[in-house]
View: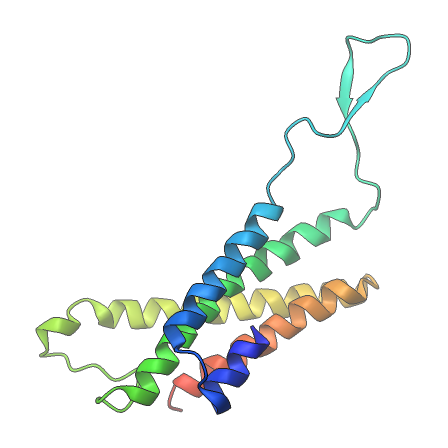
Length: 164
């Protein structure tokens, strides 16, 4: 994701469409890793082979990893949308991704979409920032860095396409 930001901002070696494809693929690969295991971890009580209980998490903060990683996986499609919006903002003839003409029939329905997507991205940024703070408070430094870095990258990309 960081390489995509650098390329979109300075190098332009790959098209934003290719970066969108790579980011969606990265999010899908991450989400496949987050699937719940089905009866993969079981514990057999000694003396009774017919009674099988699921294993308990090894760490007490194991419940924090999942929300952070799900939010990070959702950040990849959000970044892909921002990469495409960046392409429209830099190469489009309208002069900005947030500007659409109400009378244009080809832009029909995009007003609502251009309101929902930034708001969803802002909600994702907020949740990543909160998860980064909670992870830091629980001394889970790697999770905190992961969530905080994703939040920061989304903020930077969001403010490069939105004209303030």
